[in-house]
Image 1 (cartoon, rainbow, N blue to C red):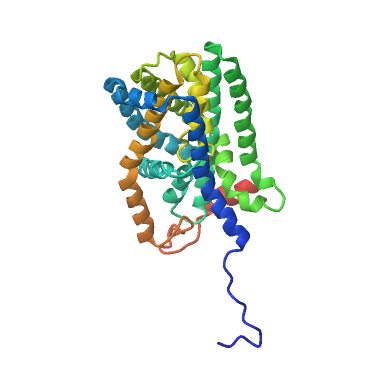
Image 2 (spheres, rainbow, N blue to C red; image 1 turned 120 degrees about the vertical axis):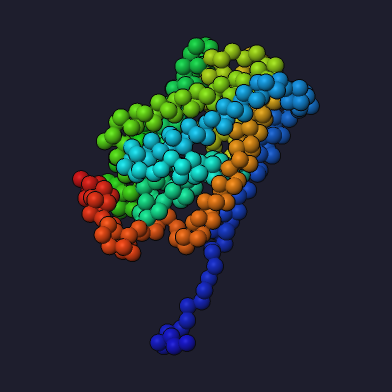
Length: 351
């Protein structure tokens, strides 16, 4: 091949440092899982916890399973509200399918990484993927705020002073995150690249009614999660009051989201054991935590497996990722954005 007198540039693979970085990222959740479980095994009687699971009251477990299924439909409706608040009208069925697919991935990815895949499955046109990723970030910011407030209320009612202080501290984080999303486009040098990412936060700020509705639904959603954990504690014979459960569960969920272990196994359970140590034996709390993982992660992951396959196949058949461009109005086959879309993502944000 003619190289124009220039020496051919050899093709090089990823730098060794990049390979080590990827390997480290993959190894951390597994190493973290082993370490956390080893610590838990050293402080609780695992056989007693397994006996508690085997003898769990089926009625309470069935209630927890039913509530977990209900949460999938609520999660889809909540996602749709956040999309509408961001100016991205997405159908409910598409939202539910994306939610179920993400639940399957959450069972194997640390930090609930499957949540961010929803943006990929929902995006259909150029630039929409970044906007929907911003929707997912906004959804997570609101979740952190709601969880912190629920934990604060429950901890204060149960007089769990340490948990209350932690919840109050966590509540400050999402406020800063929301402001960061809203003003990301003004950051020098990289602001242009972050412009679409912050569309969700800026759009939601202009639609306070939709944002309030999505926040209210998020509050009900996480309140039901507290009920699920409380039901499972009752199932294994741990008589933990509902206010203490409300004070501990949100903080345990937040710790479980940290990308330290797979599906938050061990970290979430350990936090529950720590916060509820004055209310029930650690073995019973650990048993309830394992049941929660089995229901909220593994059961829902199995239910969403078919939806994950369908969404992946749909994307593969389309032959395009989330950067695909739709036909412009009045010009079939065109890949340009309409004037309204340009105003939404361009001129509007420039001000």
